[in-house]
Length: 332
Image (tube, rainbow, N blue to C red; front, top):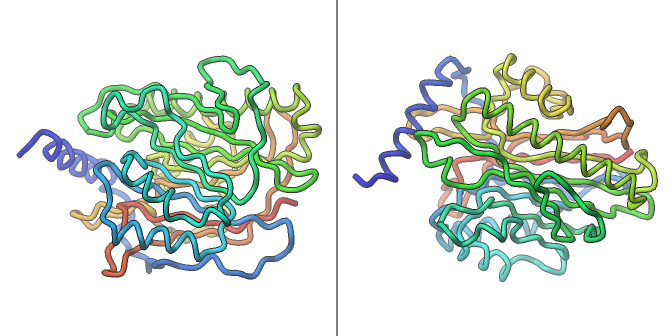
């Protein structure tokens, strides 16, 4: 058995032991569920976030199913995490409907790639709305500015799983939704199985990243009024949403955004991560909304619907060990 396989087995076993007290009740899983075509009003945006688990590449059937799903569905924003494989990235770019997703950010972590297979943040954006050029704004504290996206690597710690090999990061782009409304949309992937201290440190880094960005947007007048700025953070946080103590700490470190899945679904538990070999399921993926930042009220975001769906190929095989989390949101 090679080292990578051994570490992966250890990783799954360790996850099982940590979350063995989680709910064992299985819920009905939605498969390739549509976001729908009908919109409440012109201020609705449709968003999906998905950890693709693409380290060594995906089969063509899997990628075709994934691309077909995104092409036919009415999403405004698609956020992917763990898109590490360059062949996958190129295939998606060649097959995706570019007339629909006119604004694509295929990579945020250029400096470290391709030093090592995993040494990439794996974040990928697709949008129907245009990005706003941020190249004239100077950011501090390790924030890289690439014009259409700003990005910061999160501090890692060595662990007994392969997860620490990949860079963990936070990225954000500012999108023009209409004449007055702008959306700062952030995507992240936080380390799994890190210590409590390490997890808290990464979450505080994310909070400071968003705070600095909002402050710079307002100071530079690229956003004229905070009432016209919505701020959304999505991604894989490797933190179980159904551990109340951990969830409270998690949201506090991030500056108390709204976990809109819990807000809308209340006591209904829905899962986005599958330990396939152990029949265990958890929710590690989130879409979070900020009502204020730096004590400044922001544009209100109402939630019409949010749930998970398992994106599967034609053979009814899941494309990832994660489910996608999708939402219909109203920028009020």
